[in-house]
Length: 224
Image 1 (tube, helix red, strand yellow):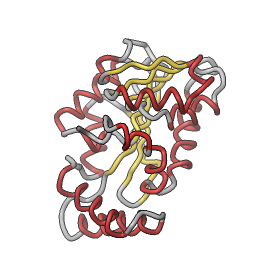
Image 2 (cartoon, helix red, strand yellow; image 1 turned 90 degrees about the horizontal axis):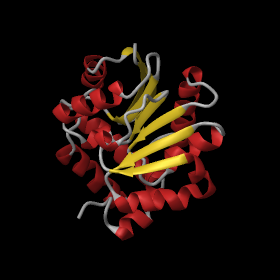
Image 3 (cartoon, helix red, strand yellow; image 1 turned 60 degrees about the vertical axis):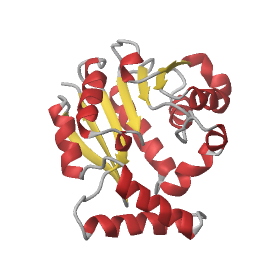
């Protein structure tokens, strides 16, 4: 059972990201601002990896006329999203599954935050292509996830920094160290250069780094 289908882990989900992702709330607000540069007042946004509802809540509160489609493979996480979003659900449709489960669009923008580091490189390119083809020309796409140098000693140093940040945020030192080791050993991580290259290979133009927080990076790109 993955942590995203374990009811106990799901119930604690909202506590985790802010402790582990430097500047998470600022990252979410920056994402909303970047989207708002291009999306019209009554725009429609696709959120890939919507489980938990944390990103959707920020976007829906900042953009009161936007509508949203969120997709996530975990039914338990989507149930949590419904609880998190409450009355905001009147503007949101949630879909259980992967990106190909999402409506065809076209969407005015899309996000994929804290998801891609779980996805192998070949599958990432396919996912990015599925997102790309659902966007209108000119639409922005915001993506953020673990992305840092993958050769030692740089890799080990960044993982140590990840663990130190988690411990400074209230996670036990032992748990933080175990998490860092698991990330390094189990996740199909890429370097920032590789991630940027994938975005361009999928078709996105004018790809720009807008966020960097220890092991995490975030980019915005656009469908030509």
